[in-house]
Length: 58
Image (cartoon, rainbow, N blue to C red; front, side):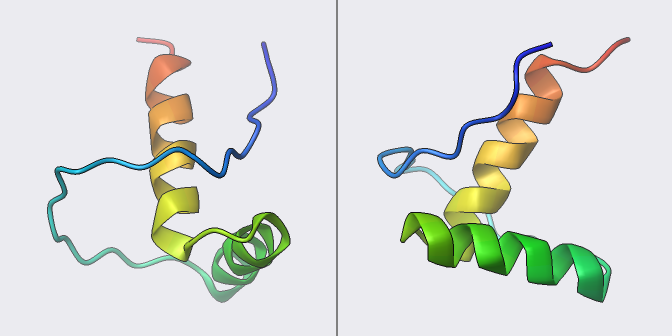
């Protein structure tokens, strides 16, 4: 399986608002990725979700 590569230009115009709960450790890792790649927390979340959905085993 390919590794996820965080990209700066991955943006979508359409968005939905939804509240999710994540662990503090996961939050910290996502925040670090966002800072390191100079993109928003939400952009990292979206890229992780899209990658996960593409690679899910059904």
